Length: 207
Image (tube, rainbow, N blue to C red; front, side):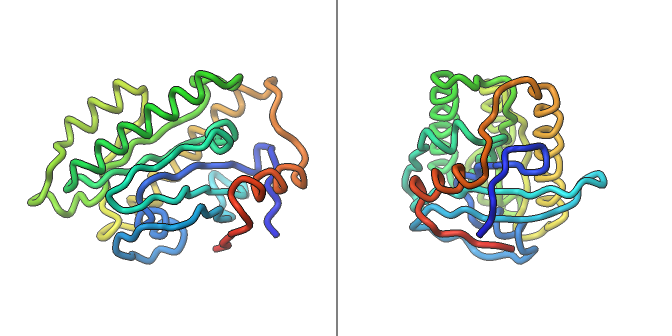
């Protein structure tokens, strides 16, 4: 069983709205879009800037064409967020906007606050520009409004672009954790694992 340790070598990311981008990052393989029917917690070990890191990536269930409910626990625990929309589907952009607002509201009510947690807004399917329903400027404007980082990508065409996106997020997370070293964080991998299992179930996948 994966141990979720709250230290600088173990990062907890919450990934929302596009299994295709997430699977591309985890496995280098591309899959078509699908609707996940259950919350999943993935584990990936990787090296960044010479440091070995354990990533715990939470993927909340999201039905295609439907809304995603952001639960309080992953919002409070997450060290970073990736919110993805489809540039050829305006509805998904509106969902992403709603999700960003839910994250903001939930974190404003928590003791952790907003400023120390990186949020990336990502427009996927850049290869489908001929079917674009959301212009790049709209995505950039929303990101500025919500104080997010912004990027458009194509999970279908460019694995390196996806890998670089997550590397950039993780570096931001690591920088922010350094500045928050004096802040009290959750500790005890066993109790954290138990809490996550109680909230999300025991579905885990390792890559």
